Amino acid sequence: MQTVLITGGAGFIGQNLVHAWRAARPEDRLVVVDALTYAANLRSLEPLIAEGTITFVDGDIRNMTLLQRLFDEHRFLRVVHLAAESHVDRSIDDPGVFLQTNVLGTFTLLKTALDAWRAASLLDRARLLHVSTDEVYGSLDATDRAFSERSPYRPNSPYAASKAASDHIVRAYVMTYGLPALITNCSNNYGPFQHPEKLIPLMIIHALEGKALPIYGDGSNVRDWLHVSDHCAALMKVIDGGRTGETYNIGGDSERSNLEVVNLICEIIDCAFAADSTLGSRFPSCPAATGRSCRSLVSFVEDRPGHDHRYAVDISKLTVALGHTTTTPFEDGLTQTVHWYLQQENWWRDVTSGAYRAWIDRNYRRRGKVGESQPVAEKVD
Image (cartoon, rainbow, N blue to C red):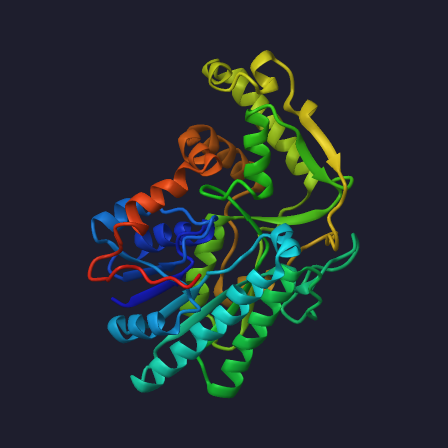
């Protein structure tokens, strides 16, 4: 048994990792720290919190006093650092928030972990995994080879630059101070519990509501898609079997253009409506409710500044060193994801309507309802 800290554990990847970790290693004690920003969601973690299976702390990773107390109390042997601002468009509008969380927050966590592990003589037993993105490598042309762990960093958005900076800080702490840390750079994730601002859930929800499906530029931008369950499995392998100081790319080996992805989503929804007559009454504004294709909603909008053309990652290092392979074909994973959003209408309507934020205030913020043995949540605004 070991005690594990997961930062950003109420986010999309974070909550999926919590569930995957609980299923694979039920004897471990999990402590989740999350600042509960707009992109966080505790719905799927609520049963685990209520039964005491995990400890939840509403807190900001920039709060060193909070982190020091948690390290002292729990003596973490594993830390998975997922807390980050991650939306490119938002980083263009307000880059300062990304520098604060992704750079300063990462530094605060690294310093706290190093100090705590040194004081407790745990440096030879502990491990910290910093979860990053393939966007730090910049953009590829259509014929370029996929990014490897040796590819130069060339970030093109404030978000990517903030993650690149945090990667460099992690590496510096390994080389200068001997912090037992590892880095992973992943491709685009998709799957259940993803915030509706991201491409796949946004297109699903817009199609169901009969809204335009806006695609940047001509839709030719290419991304490598990784199902979140494959990502979580890889993270657990890396933190256990990876070499400290090393970087591992995690990808889905599923390159698709944005237009291909949106067209496939439309096809899956069209087929779902054809097979289930009740969907038409639930979502009457969806074109598929009247036998038309959701592709009629596709529209093209002005491209965003600095839009990277293509991402692709070479996962051979991860495969050879740790034996990890992806198990979810993109078409299967996307079909599962579309049907998840069809089944979880209440979840995404709460998120998009603002009802979820009121639920957070009512159940957590106002009453200070946090995990067992934790005081009222601390937060840096």
